[in-house]
Length: 366
Image (cartoon, rainbow, N blue to C red; front, side):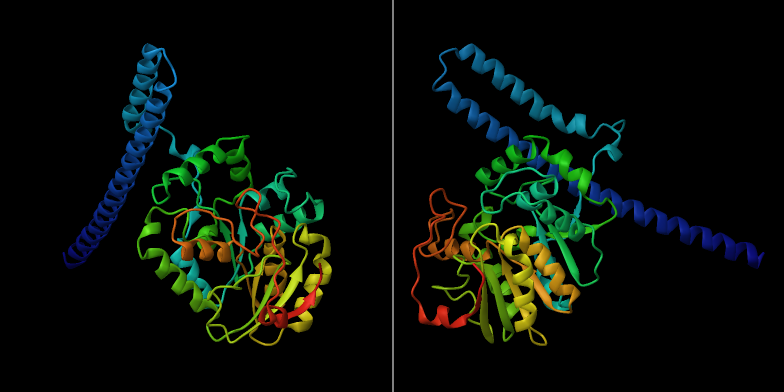
């Protein structure tokens, strides 16, 4: 009898564990559904506003009314279509991406390196000419694919969090992402390259300001303050395009112990990759932190330096984001003296004569 009671209690304990797990999964599903409904309502409102704008220039009001009805019907019926239990959810893959906050904590707390993959990097891998700041290079594409699939324990592979809910982004940023992800088979291309059993990190860690809805709050300031802790009191070597000039004219890097710079070509920096890597290793010392901003080649350099025992971060765009944050307008702006591929016509930086900046340059490989 005592043995049967013990067995019965174990069965009860097991059932209680299963019930708890189901309750947790149910709560998680409720949160996911709430986020989905919020995103759908937002999408409907965007579509409605677009149709209203179109109605100002289109005379056929009947056509507008019909289109609005279609948009409304699609949007409001979407939750039921998406949540149908007959839907085979295994057909839809969403990469597991740790948040920007978690990414920063891994970099600071565990001394991890990072390579970021966005449009420029994926374009190189699939041999698609898309960006003028780096010409298509078969060797670069091959190296980037090697990094993407690498499993180095000190290397974070970061991808842009574009694949699911866009609720944290501004309307204009979310729309730009939607257009990008649905144009030319982009999503399919990415899905064929990403690994389903992998945890990725957030490539937007170096874009903490202009894309986000909370740009007018103190949240971006807190994000930048935490990012600055990465190089606090560290010996830093910046490897950057010749006109990037990270941290000049602002206080982004003020907390660093020492700063040195290796200048790469402003565009197509991979043309000088072997020389850049050699120079970086020649000037590195124990505990040197590398900050890299030189287009798609940055992730490859971060990987190779990590393999040599250094912490190296592909952190391009951060300085421009900081300049825009300081301007406080919530949008991309021209930045004097700095190469800026984010604003049309601002990719020819003015000459800079700054003794402090010039004194930091230890190698010029333009």
